[in-house]
Image (cartoon, rainbow over all chains, first blue to last red; front, side, top):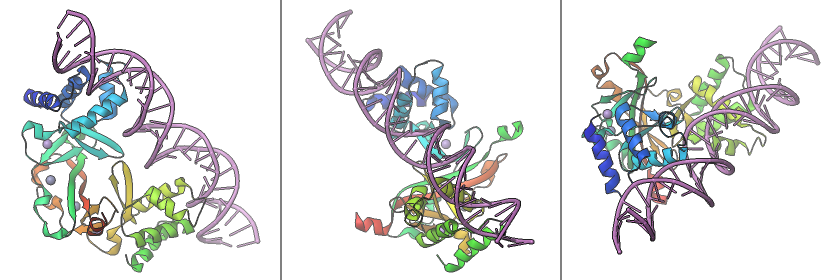
Length: 144
Length: 144
DNA sequence: TGAAAATTCGTAATGATTACGATATAATCA
DNA sequence: TGATTATATCGTAATCATTACGAATTTTCA
Ligand SMILES: [Mn+2]
Ligand SMILES: [Mn+2]
Ligand SMILES: [Zn+2]
Ligand SMILES: [Zn+2]
């Protein structure tokens, strides 16, 4: 993840009138550096080192704000919400992901299934779609 | 949902050595009749009428057993697990769903995105995939 | 009908997420 | 820079879906 996208994230924060706090900075840097899906717990485990009194309220509120303003994207896996740095901040256009269920690492899928059927859903109002492939990545395969 | 698929579900139960209890019968009938995604809470709300002392332990244990033996299929929406009668019991081949976020009703999508990219994931081991379209169905659009 | 195994009940524990009043901090401007 | 004010964070409790488990019940099969 490039430094440019961290800049873009910070710019977004300020544009929308959010305050630029040290916790928010750290969260953005964490996601930019990790470049994979993280749970709220992983975020708190990591930031607890720097901010021992960090509250879950702060973590969740910021995670959701970040999703709101498109700094993060969100998914849900076995009952837990997971977040990653938004690919669109990197200038990439709409795509989907292979997600490693062991480490959260992703690979881009350059194909959106929404481009196909269209006519099959007359009368319904489409709000969103989800396409994800789950498995084990190369690295995790080696380790196990 | 046909009566034939209820029969198939019961047959599956017995084949696998599960006991055929009145709660299991009622759950299967409920899903066959509803023909849409239901939460554990909806299941218990409905069955509570017949079995006032029905336990969540029973509901979840049976839901998971049913998924295991392919009587039900499962998805996850805004932090809640949801279950529906398995389309494959009806003899339909692999497909995906449009899901109405208001009522849980589904429409079949006759297209699997896995048929396309293939070569994009060298080295990874694919375990599963998820493709779902969310929105509001015709009926719920009328009502609102 | 009776014994063995599986199932259910009643209830408590867990774990992620959400909520909220009190306190602290960032941004703005005199 | 110092005061002001809106926003953010902390500390902690509440909520809610899900899971767990010992005791009691029911199904199955001989
Ligand atoms: Mn991507
Ligand atoms: Mn279907
Ligand atoms: Zn898409
Ligand atoms: Zn598919």
